[in-house]
Image (cartoon, rainbow, N blue to C red; front, side):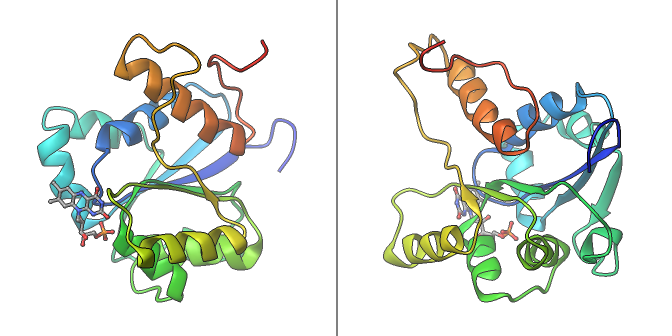
Length: 190
Ligand SMILES: Cc1cc2nc3c(=O)[nH]c(=O)nc-3n(C[C@H](O)[C@H](O)[C@H](O)COP(=O)(O)O)c2cc1C
C-alpha cells in the first residue's frame, strides 16, 4: 500500500495487563488520515478492560472502523487475500503468544497474526508478563526469529520522563515507527 491509499491496520487487545496502552495506540492511529482500524478484543481483554479502563470501554471501541468478534473466524482479516499494513497485539498475553507460536489459530486474533506471518506482513507484539518464564522467553525469541517485532512495555528513563504518560508516549512511538506512522516522541540525538 502506498501514497494516499487507505492504510488498514489490525489492532488486537488480549487479556494481559495494559488496556490503557491499547487505548493510547488506537487514539494515535485514529489521528491519522486514511487510516482504517480493524479491532478485535479477546475474552480476556474484556475482563482486563473492566479492571483497568472501566469507564472507557465505549471510547476504546468507538475508535475502530471495523470491530470483530474474536470467534468470527470467517472475518475479512482471517484471510491473506484481505490486504493489510500489519497487526499490533497490545497488550499481548502469554497465552496468545503461545497460540501464535504454535500456529494454533482457534480464534480470530490468532488467525490474523498467523496470516501476517505467512504473508510476510508486519506483526508487532506488545507482550506483558512479569517475571517471564523460560517458556515465554522461548516463544518470544522464536517469534522474533520468525519476523515478529517484540516491543514489551518497558520503562525508559534516558528521555527523562515526568510521568507514566510520558513513558507510554515513548512506547506508542516505538510501535508507530514499526507501522511507518509518524510519531512524536523524544528520540535520542534529536
Ligand atoms: C486482571 C488480569 C490481569 C492479567 N494480566 C496478565 C498479564 O499481564 N500477562 C498475561 O500473560 N496474562 C495475564 N492475565 C491472564 C490472561 O488474561 C489469561 O491467560 C487469558 O486466558 C488470556 O487469554 P487471551 O490471550 O485470549 O486474552 C491476566 C488476567 C487478569 C484477570
